Image (cartoon, rainbow, N blue to C red):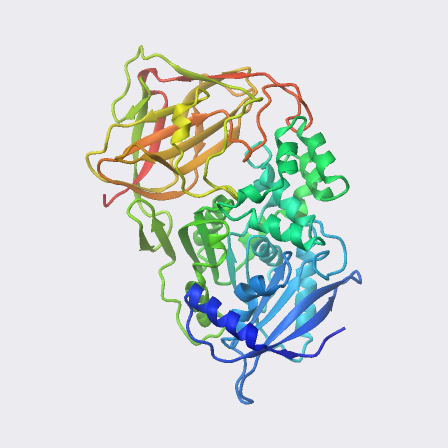
Amino acid sequence: MTGQPVSRSYAGATLDYLGARYVGVGREACSYTTQAIQIPMRDGVKLAADFYAPELPDNQVPAGLIMIQCCYGRSAGISFINARIFAARGFQALFVSTRGTYGSGGTFDPGRNEQSDSQDIVVWMRQQPWYHGSFATLGASYLGYSQWALLHDPPADCVAAVIAVGPHDHAWHAWGTGSFRLDRAFWSDMMSRRGDERGSFLSRLANIPGLSFLRSSELEDAVAGLPLEAGLGKYFGDKAPWLFEYLKHPNVEDVYWTSRRHHDALERVKIPILLVSGWYDTFTTQTMHQFRYLHDRGMNVSLVVGPWTHVQASGLYSMPEIMDFFTEHLAKIGKYPHSPARIFITGSEDWRSMPTWPPPTQPTVLYLQGKNGIGSEQPVQDASPASFIFDPLNPTPSIGGNQMSSGGRVDDSAYADRSDVLTFTSEPLSQDLEVLGIPSIHLMHASSPPFADLFVRLSEVDAQGVSHNISDVYRALDPSRDTSQPLRLDLQDCAHRFRVGTRVRLIVAGGSFPMYARSLGTAENRVRSDKTAPQTHTITIAGGVSQLILPVGVTV
């Protein structure tokens, strides 16, 4: 069933004008019409979609077709950033609701059906009289994942893709650290409220930094209680069944995750791709991996990374680059004017154009020292070890960082005042230090009992003594590992300039809650048990065996 094309209203034109000014793109080229469409899938399910057609002179063809798949509806706000802004500049846009969401038939099962459904959309699209032989894809977050699902088997007529904060691997995000990523519960709450417009709207607002207070207090209580799975079961009831499948499958290699992992897309894709991320996005690690992999294959891949959270990096601040990218690779009438990597350097607060990421660096070693210090001098052989106790019943809180909400660059000075956290802080720097790439940590670490997690963060302490986060890593430790050897962990990519007078700080804790499901300190399943044991963490410092290795720019 297909509706009649509807011309843009005055209110819609006004919204488009104001929105375009906010995101910083140029003037409109035309108006457009919107047509409601039902797209048949191979199993008989029909997906709801809106087709945006630019109103052009008879002798002018559209600049190109953009395909978008979305599980968050097709309302004014989300359609502006994904469809309307492009239709008003001469592009066609096909905006499709994911199976089981917002008018589309079938059952929503995150990540499972996007690979086959996206192929069916393309088959249908090719049969339409308005199809001109090629298309590009667009979207952020889950909309980005849908693109990777399509590119698992790249269609020959797909010529470009813009993927912002888009994971290609659901398993990696949910269980890649060895602990469960609890933002999956809060996201599932939002998705299970699709029929409740007010509840859905408030859940979406709760994912915006600074508005996490809008989260359901009942859900927060469920996440805080033990056992985790039982508390979530009581809260959700028969809603969000996929969440409980996530909890049942902690092994990322489990067959359950196969249809939700698209590493093959990174190997098979050959089209130009623009990746957009933020240093504080929840999917930054996956985006940086995507860029490295594609760049190493010699693909035409570009990267923009700003000082942004997940929502901010979803296109709000990168629309000029996105428009330039489509102008060259879809419309074929312009040139993408930026270097392959456009990187924001925190600390110096400036943008840098680079031929690749990371740029050439040299490792700089800082040794963990006694009296909570860190510096270039090795500690003496008889330096005392450092230790702390993590209590699962009073877990170390998450402060800022790469969270879906409540994240970003924040004051994390509170960690230094906690007894369950170690902080190692350098003397004020005598010269600038620019860190570009992946910091790593070598810790001579042991825990008792051996069932434990580690959270490690790199922060900067300014001249006023205030600490702000830069990069971190979380890992559920292998209880059978050889503790006579250093534990080696890579932190997340970062680009930060420590200015003269600032100090380097390393933060070590046994948890980050509610970012991750806490370690219970026992051999039992962390999401199904309520038995806990405090964990004593010990870090050996003597002789310089515990180190922070920083990739320092060669020009600094």
